[in-house]
Amino acid sequence: MTSFPTHSATVDPVLPFITPPYTNESLFLPRRSRHVPPEVWQIFPTDIPEHWHEFAKDKGYEIVRRVRDKNHIVLECQTCGGMTAHKVYTLRSTKPECATCQYDRTIETAKAARLIFLGYHPTNRHLGVFRAPCGHELIRQFEFVERCARGDACPRCEACHAAKEQEEATTRGWNLIGPDPQNDPSYRLYRHICGQEQRVARANMQTGRFCCEECGEGWSSAPSYIYAMRFVFPDGTQVVKLGFSRDPQSRLHYQLKRSAGAKSAGTNSSEIDGDLLRQVPMQSGHLALCVEKRLHAEIKRTYPGAALPVERFDTWLRVKSEIYVAELEPVILAMLRRLHGDARDLD
Image (cartoon, rainbow, N blue to C red; front, side):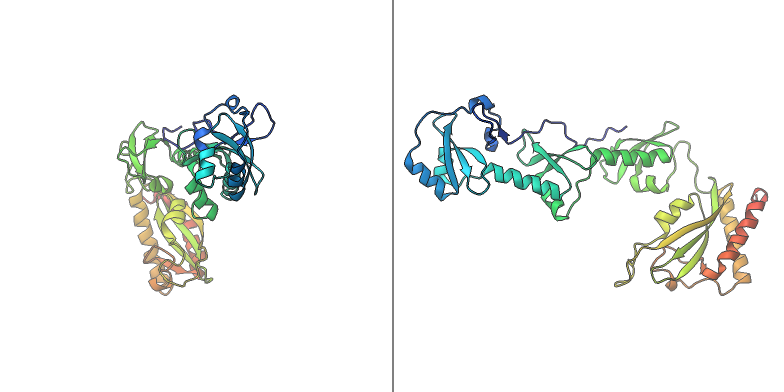
Protein backbone atom coordinates (compact mmCIF):
# COMPACT_ATOMS: atom_id res chain seq x y z
CA MET A 1 0.00 0.00 0.00
CA THR A 2 2.73 2.46 0.92
CA SER A 3 6.43 2.52 1.68
CA PHE A 4 6.15 5.13 4.43
CA PRO A 5 8.47 4.51 7.37
CA THR A 6 6.29 4.34 10.47
CA HIS A 7 6.64 4.18 14.22
CA SER A 8 4.43 1.12 14.44
CA ALA A 9 5.85 -1.49 16.79
CA THR A 10 8.45 -3.78 15.21
CA VAL A 11 10.09 -4.88 18.46
CA ASP A 12 9.07 -7.16 21.29
CA PRO A 13 8.17 -5.03 24.33
CA VAL A 14 10.09 -5.72 27.52
CA LEU A 15 8.15 -6.17 30.75
CA PRO A 16 9.72 -4.73 33.92
CA PHE A 17 9.07 -7.80 36.07
CA ILE A 18 9.78 -11.53 36.22
CA THR A 19 8.46 -14.45 38.24
CA PRO A 20 11.43 -15.96 40.09
CA PRO A 21 11.59 -19.76 40.19
CA TYR A 22 11.15 -19.88 43.98
CA THR A 23 7.90 -17.84 44.16
CA ASN A 24 4.76 -16.90 42.25
CA GLU A 25 5.23 -13.22 43.12
CA SER A 26 6.21 -10.60 40.54
CA LEU A 27 9.69 -9.21 41.07
CA PHE A 28 10.26 -5.87 39.37
CA LEU A 29 13.72 -5.16 38.00
CA PRO A 30 15.64 -1.92 37.45
CA ARG A 31 15.96 -0.91 33.81
CA ARG A 32 19.57 -2.05 33.43
CA SER A 33 18.80 -5.50 34.87
CA ARG A 34 15.82 -6.40 32.68
CA HIS A 35 18.01 -8.42 30.32
CA VAL A 36 18.95 -10.82 33.13
CA PRO A 37 16.93 -14.10 32.85
CA PRO A 38 14.62 -15.19 35.71
CA GLU A 39 16.72 -18.20 36.75
CA VAL A 40 19.56 -15.88 37.77
CA TRP A 41 17.46 -14.24 40.49
CA GLN A 42 17.80 -17.12 42.95
CA ILE A 43 17.79 -16.50 46.70
CA PHE A 44 21.29 -15.69 47.93
CA PRO A 45 21.52 -17.50 51.31
CA THR A 46 23.35 -14.92 53.40
CA ASP A 47 22.24 -12.96 56.45
CA ILE A 48 21.15 -9.35 56.08
CA PRO A 49 23.02 -6.88 58.33
CA GLU A 50 20.69 -5.21 60.81
CA HIS A 51 21.62 -1.66 59.84
CA TRP A 52 20.49 -2.37 56.24
CA HIS A 53 16.96 -2.70 57.55
CA GLU A 54 17.23 0.77 59.05
CA PHE A 55 18.43 2.18 55.71
CA ALA A 56 15.45 0.59 53.97
CA LYS A 57 12.86 1.71 56.51
CA ASP A 58 14.05 5.31 56.36
CA LYS A 59 13.57 5.26 52.57
CA GLY A 60 10.11 3.67 52.53
CA TYR A 61 11.02 -0.01 52.06
CA GLU A 62 11.34 -3.32 53.84
CA ILE A 63 14.14 -5.71 52.88
CA VAL A 64 12.60 -9.08 51.95
CA ARG A 65 15.65 -11.16 50.96
CA ARG A 66 18.99 -11.18 49.23
CA VAL A 67 19.00 -12.43 45.65
CA ARG A 68 21.30 -13.18 42.72
CA ASP A 69 24.57 -12.38 44.55
CA LYS A 70 25.91 -10.55 47.56
CA ASN A 71 25.25 -7.17 45.93
CA HIS A 72 21.46 -7.46 45.35
CA ILE A 73 18.42 -7.34 47.63
CA VAL A 74 14.63 -7.36 47.22
CA LEU A 75 12.84 -4.29 48.58
CA GLU A 76 9.13 -4.23 49.38
CA CYS A 77 7.57 -0.79 48.82
CA GLN A 78 5.64 0.45 51.86
CA THR A 79 3.36 2.46 49.53
CA CYS A 80 2.21 -0.12 46.96
CA GLY A 81 3.49 -3.41 48.35
CA GLY A 82 5.39 -4.20 45.16
CA MET A 83 8.81 -5.80 45.25
CA THR A 84 11.81 -4.46 43.34
CA ALA A 85 15.34 -5.85 43.10
CA HIS A 86 18.06 -3.28 43.75
CA LYS A 87 21.75 -3.19 44.45
CA VAL A 88 22.75 -2.69 48.07
CA TYR A 89 24.83 0.28 46.94
CA THR A 90 21.68 1.97 45.59
CA LEU A 91 19.94 1.55 48.94
CA ARG A 92 22.90 2.96 50.83
CA SER A 93 23.67 5.91 48.54
CA THR A 94 20.25 7.17 47.42
CA LYS A 95 16.52 6.51 47.60
CA PRO A 96 15.72 3.62 45.26
CA GLU A 97 12.82 4.05 42.87
CA CYS A 98 9.98 1.59 43.18
CA ALA A 99 9.63 -0.02 39.75
CA THR A 100 6.11 -1.17 40.63
CA CYS A 101 4.93 2.38 41.32
CA GLN A 102 6.61 3.59 38.15
CA TYR A 103 4.95 0.83 36.12
CA ASP A 104 1.52 1.66 37.57
CA ARG A 105 1.97 5.36 36.76
CA THR A 106 2.96 4.51 33.18
CA ILE A 107 -0.15 2.36 32.75
CA GLU A 108 -2.42 5.11 34.10
CA THR A 109 -0.78 7.78 31.93
CA ALA A 110 -1.23 5.60 28.86
CA LYS A 111 -4.86 5.01 29.77
CA ALA A 112 -5.43 8.77 30.03
CA ALA A 113 -3.95 9.07 26.53
CA ARG A 114 -6.36 6.36 25.28
CA LEU A 115 -3.51 3.86 24.89
CA ILE A 116 -2.62 0.52 26.44
CA PHE A 117 0.94 0.19 27.70
CA LEU A 118 2.49 -3.09 26.54
CA GLY A 119 6.07 -2.71 27.75
CA TYR A 120 9.38 -0.94 27.39
CA HIS A 121 11.52 -0.64 24.29
CA PRO A 122 14.39 -3.15 24.55
CA THR A 123 17.18 -0.68 23.66
CA ASN A 124 15.85 2.87 24.16
CA ARG A 125 14.82 3.83 27.69
CA HIS A 126 12.84 6.84 26.42
CA LEU A 127 10.44 4.69 24.37
CA GLY A 128 7.53 2.45 25.21
CA VAL A 129 5.33 0.11 23.19
CA PHE A 130 1.61 0.92 23.25
CA ARG A 131 -1.58 -0.35 21.65
CA ALA A 132 -3.76 2.31 20.02
CA PRO A 133 -7.60 2.21 20.03
CA CYS A 134 -7.48 0.96 16.41
CA GLY A 135 -5.56 -2.15 17.55
CA HIS A 136 -2.20 -1.25 16.02
CA GLU A 137 0.93 -1.17 18.17
CA LEU A 138 2.89 2.08 18.38
CA ILE A 139 6.33 3.05 19.67
CA ARG A 140 6.22 6.41 21.42
CA GLN A 141 8.32 8.47 23.80
CA PHE A 142 7.01 8.48 27.36
CA GLU A 143 7.19 12.28 27.38
CA PHE A 144 4.94 12.38 24.30
CA VAL A 145 2.42 10.04 25.94
CA GLU A 146 2.35 12.35 28.97
CA ARG A 147 1.49 15.27 26.68
CA CYS A 148 -1.27 13.17 25.11
CA ALA A 149 -2.64 12.40 28.55
CA ARG A 150 -2.81 16.14 29.28
CA GLY A 151 -4.59 16.76 25.99
CA ASP A 152 -1.67 18.66 24.44
CA ALA A 153 -1.05 16.08 21.68
CA CYS A 154 -2.74 13.15 19.94
CA PRO A 155 -1.17 9.68 19.47
CA ARG A 156 -1.84 9.27 15.74
CA CYS A 157 -1.51 5.76 14.30
CA GLU A 158 0.71 5.90 11.18
CA ALA A 159 -0.79 2.72 9.72
CA CYS A 160 -4.33 4.12 9.87
CA HIS A 161 -3.16 7.54 8.69
CA ALA A 162 -1.38 6.02 5.68
CA ALA A 163 -4.53 4.05 4.84
CA LYS A 164 -6.54 7.28 5.00
CA GLU A 165 -4.10 9.03 2.66
CA GLN A 166 -4.26 6.06 0.27
CA GLU A 167 -8.05 6.26 0.29
CA GLU A 168 -7.87 9.97 -0.55
CA ALA A 169 -5.59 9.17 -3.48
CA THR A 170 -7.68 6.23 -4.72
CA THR A 171 -10.76 8.43 -4.81
CA ARG A 172 -9.01 10.60 -7.42
CA GLY A 173 -7.40 7.79 -9.41
CA TRP A 174 -3.98 7.88 -7.79
CA ASN A 175 -1.87 5.50 -5.69
CA LEU A 176 0.19 6.67 -2.73
CA ILE A 177 3.82 5.61 -3.22
CA GLY A 178 5.48 7.19 -0.20
CA PRO A 179 6.92 10.38 1.31
CA ASP A 180 8.08 13.32 -0.75
CA PRO A 181 11.53 12.65 -2.32
CA GLN A 182 12.38 16.30 -1.59
CA ASN A 183 11.46 15.84 2.10
CA ASP A 184 8.69 18.43 2.14
CA PRO A 185 6.27 17.21 4.86
CA SER A 186 3.32 18.78 3.02
CA TYR A 187 3.91 16.67 -0.11
CA ARG A 188 3.67 12.99 -1.02
CA LEU A 189 4.77 10.96 -4.03
CA TYR A 190 1.84 9.50 -5.99
CA ARG A 191 1.35 7.36 -9.12
CA HIS A 192 -1.56 8.09 -11.47
CA ILE A 193 -3.61 5.39 -13.22
CA CYS A 194 -1.78 6.38 -16.43
CA GLY A 195 1.56 5.49 -14.79
CA GLN A 196 2.73 9.06 -14.15
CA GLU A 197 4.56 9.59 -10.84
CA GLN A 198 4.67 13.07 -9.35
CA ARG A 199 4.85 15.09 -6.16
CA VAL A 200 1.49 16.43 -4.99
CA ALA A 201 0.64 18.39 -1.86
CA ARG A 202 -1.64 16.29 0.30
CA ALA A 203 -4.03 19.23 0.66
CA ASN A 204 -4.32 19.36 -3.16
CA MET A 205 -4.94 15.61 -3.32
CA GLN A 206 -7.76 16.07 -0.82
CA THR A 207 -9.34 18.95 -2.72
CA GLY A 208 -8.52 17.88 -6.29
CA ARG A 209 -6.83 21.19 -7.10
CA PHE A 210 -4.15 19.74 -9.38
CA CYS A 211 -3.87 17.68 -12.56
CA CYS A 212 -1.69 14.85 -13.87
CA GLU A 213 1.35 16.26 -15.66
CA GLU A 214 1.18 13.43 -18.19
CA CYS A 215 -2.47 13.07 -19.14
CA GLY A 216 -4.24 15.77 -17.14
CA GLU A 217 -6.20 18.68 -18.52
CA GLY A 218 -6.06 22.29 -17.44
CA TRP A 219 -9.17 23.90 -16.01
CA SER A 220 -10.08 25.55 -19.33
CA SER A 221 -10.31 22.28 -21.27
CA ALA A 222 -11.37 19.90 -18.49
CA PRO A 223 -15.07 19.13 -17.92
CA SER A 224 -16.66 21.52 -15.44
CA TYR A 225 -19.96 22.41 -13.76
CA ILE A 226 -22.21 25.39 -13.18
CA TYR A 227 -23.45 25.16 -9.61
CA ALA A 228 -25.75 26.76 -7.05
CA MET A 229 -24.90 26.65 -3.34
CA ARG A 230 -26.67 27.78 -0.20
CA PHE A 231 -24.78 29.07 2.86
CA VAL A 232 -26.13 29.75 6.35
CA PHE A 233 -23.87 31.88 8.56
CA PRO A 234 -23.74 31.49 12.36
CA ASP A 235 -25.76 34.70 12.79
CA GLY A 236 -28.62 33.13 10.80
CA THR A 237 -27.99 34.98 7.52
CA GLN A 238 -28.74 32.81 4.48
CA VAL A 239 -27.22 33.47 1.07
CA VAL A 240 -26.98 31.74 -2.30
CA LYS A 241 -23.98 31.52 -4.64
CA LEU A 242 -23.88 30.89 -8.38
CA GLY A 243 -20.53 29.83 -9.87
CA PHE A 244 -18.56 27.25 -11.83
CA SER A 245 -15.97 24.66 -10.79
CA ARG A 246 -14.33 21.48 -12.03
CA ASP A 247 -15.20 19.90 -8.64
CA PRO A 248 -18.12 21.64 -6.86
CA GLN A 249 -17.91 19.39 -3.80
CA SER A 250 -14.25 20.27 -3.28
CA ARG A 251 -15.03 23.95 -3.81
CA LEU A 252 -17.80 23.79 -1.22
CA HIS A 253 -15.91 21.95 1.49
CA TYR A 254 -12.32 23.13 1.02
CA GLN A 255 -12.17 26.43 -0.89
CA LEU A 256 -15.12 28.70 -0.15
CA LYS A 257 -15.58 28.56 3.62
CA ARG A 258 -13.28 30.56 5.84
CA SER A 259 -12.23 29.32 9.24
CA ALA A 260 -15.16 30.39 11.36
CA GLY A 261 -14.71 33.94 12.61
CA ALA A 262 -11.13 34.16 11.30
CA LYS A 263 -11.52 37.71 9.99
CA SER A 264 -13.30 39.12 12.98
CA ALA A 265 -12.09 38.83 16.53
CA GLY A 266 -14.90 37.97 18.87
CA THR A 267 -17.10 36.67 16.07
CA ASN A 268 -19.24 33.66 16.81
CA SER A 269 -17.03 30.68 15.94
CA SER A 270 -19.89 28.30 15.08
CA GLU A 271 -19.60 26.22 11.95
CA ILE A 272 -20.80 27.59 8.61
CA ASP A 273 -23.49 25.45 6.96
CA GLY A 274 -23.21 24.94 3.23
CA ASP A 275 -25.15 22.82 0.72
CA LEU A 276 -24.67 22.10 -2.97
CA LEU A 277 -28.17 22.65 -4.37
CA ARG A 278 -27.65 21.77 -8.02
CA GLN A 279 -24.87 21.32 -10.58
CA VAL A 280 -25.06 21.27 -14.37
CA PRO A 281 -22.23 19.61 -16.33
CA MET A 282 -20.33 21.67 -18.91
CA GLN A 283 -18.04 20.31 -21.62
CA SER A 284 -15.13 22.53 -20.59
CA GLY A 285 -14.05 25.09 -18.04
CA HIS A 286 -13.94 27.76 -20.74
CA LEU A 287 -17.56 27.07 -21.66
CA ALA A 288 -18.56 27.08 -17.98
CA LEU A 289 -16.90 30.47 -17.48
CA CYS A 290 -18.75 31.97 -20.46
CA VAL A 291 -22.09 30.58 -19.30
CA GLU A 292 -21.53 31.74 -15.73
CA LYS A 293 -20.81 35.30 -16.89
CA ARG A 294 -23.96 35.29 -18.98
CA LEU A 295 -26.08 34.15 -16.02
CA HIS A 296 -24.63 36.79 -13.70
CA ALA A 297 -25.30 39.47 -16.30
CA GLU A 298 -28.93 38.30 -16.57
CA ILE A 299 -29.34 38.45 -12.78
CA LYS A 300 -27.81 41.94 -12.66
CA ARG A 301 -30.27 43.21 -15.28
CA THR A 302 -33.35 41.55 -13.82
CA TYR A 303 -32.59 41.78 -10.08
CA PRO A 304 -30.19 44.73 -9.68
CA GLY A 305 -30.34 44.75 -5.86
CA ALA A 306 -29.88 41.00 -5.30
CA ALA A 307 -26.07 40.95 -5.04
CA LEU A 308 -24.78 41.42 -1.50
CA PRO A 309 -21.93 43.84 -0.72
CA VAL A 310 -18.67 42.10 0.19
CA GLU A 311 -18.72 43.27 3.82
CA ARG A 312 -21.90 41.17 4.36
CA PHE A 313 -20.11 37.87 3.72
CA ASP A 314 -16.34 38.49 3.68
CA THR A 315 -16.00 37.21 7.26
CA TRP A 316 -17.30 33.79 6.22
CA LEU A 317 -16.51 33.23 2.53
CA ARG A 318 -13.31 33.46 0.48
CA VAL A 319 -14.90 35.34 -2.42
CA LYS A 320 -15.44 39.01 -3.20
CA SER A 321 -18.60 38.97 -5.31
CA GLU A 322 -21.45 36.95 -6.83
CA ILE A 323 -23.18 36.20 -3.51
CA TYR A 324 -26.93 36.83 -3.61
CA VAL A 325 -29.77 37.24 -1.14
CA ALA A 326 -31.60 34.08 -0.12
CA GLU A 327 -34.77 35.20 -1.94
CA LEU A 328 -32.96 34.68 -5.27
CA GLU A 329 -32.46 30.94 -4.67
CA PRO A 330 -35.59 29.74 -6.58
CA VAL A 331 -34.70 32.07 -9.45
CA ILE A 332 -31.16 30.67 -9.73
CA LEU A 333 -32.40 27.07 -9.50
CA ALA A 334 -34.89 27.76 -12.30
CA MET A 335 -32.03 29.14 -14.42
CA LEU A 336 -30.02 25.95 -13.84
CA ARG A 337 -32.99 23.74 -14.71
CA ARG A 338 -33.35 25.63 -17.95
CA LEU A 339 -29.60 25.45 -18.52
CA HIS A 340 -29.57 21.69 -17.99
CA GLY A 341 -31.93 21.25 -20.91
CA ASP A 342 -29.83 23.51 -23.15
CA ALA A 343 -26.33 22.44 -22.07
CA ARG A 344 -25.62 20.29 -25.13
CA ASP A 345 -26.19 23.22 -27.48
CA LEU A 346 -24.20 25.84 -25.61
CA ASP A 347 -20.91 25.29 -27.42
